[in-house]
Length: 93
Ligand SMILES: [Mg+2]
Image (tube, rainbow, N blue to C red; front, side):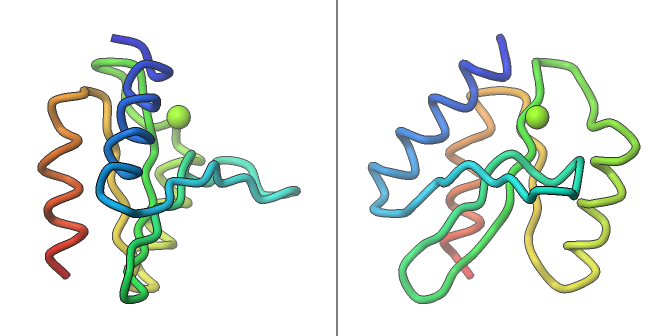
């Protein structure tokens, strides 16, 4: 299962739930999460997508920890099967 396939599924699932799943790029800052998820009510979360079984690179882990320290939810998804549970959790806040 490729990162691209997981990403496509995530984008369509978020859309189905009425949210936004924008690609997240921050010029000059490498390793930021791939997607920023926005839901009604000011709900925000970040997602780092990986090929199945792959872990985030050290710089990606650093960015994830930084965002978490600021209180944001950040998820690493490497399997389509994880998507429903992650979105449920994001939306339950
Ligand atoms: Mg990625």
